[in-house]
Length: 280
Image 1 (cartoon, rainbow, N blue to C red):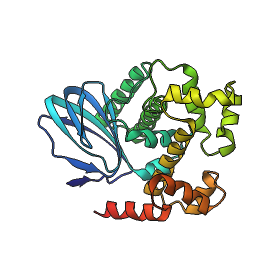
Image 2 (cartoon, one colour):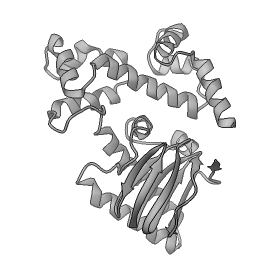
Image 3 (spheres, rainbow, N blue to C red):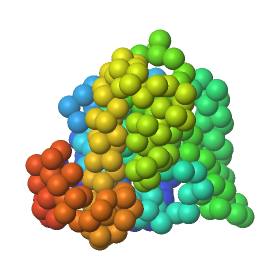
Image 4 (tube, rainbow, N blue to C red):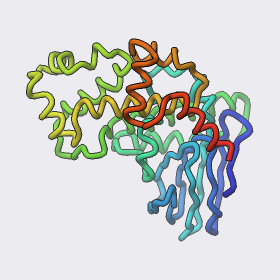
């Protein structure tokens, strides 16, 4: 299968397609905006119908192709992991939320109704600047791309666990947001601290979270940490001792034991396996 690469940290391009494309594997992140047309997105073995206005997020190593039913116009926003890692994001864990949720999603990422017109206006602005290059166009395109990534991140953070129901009360989403923001501070995400912060008895918190989110509180915290650590190992050169400090573990042995309990291999072995798979 062909692996698709980009030659700059960020690329924005307009594409019109009449026929189905051959499958490719991404080596970067891609926001796919549907301007017009209909068809199916086939990604990682799943098939999703797309329509005008849909915005879809793809991540490195995703395998995809389009089945075109009606001639389709796309705006493709591509950015590599160096851009994710090096850009000075102002919002807390913005890109981490994208990384955490992206592989669970293959349909339109816009879930907040109030964000839909905002995202669409940014897409139109990107189209205008790519078609009408002028002074400062590159700066404007960068700002628009960052705004689009941030809006997508905001929508992804609202999704939380996949089992959460639409009928769940607002407090569970507030708790999930709080955990994601404070994931690097172990003392802040202890059950006793969360219960105190949200005025819930500690004994009730566990059953409440399980009922509302579909998984236990501790399992959600562990899985979220694992996902972030996985992406650190995949997409950065961070040292193991830096991960220990970042996630508040007592030492490397403690972190390795935690990681191995979920993934079955040590941090170093996991990183080597990922590097080996990328080479092929």
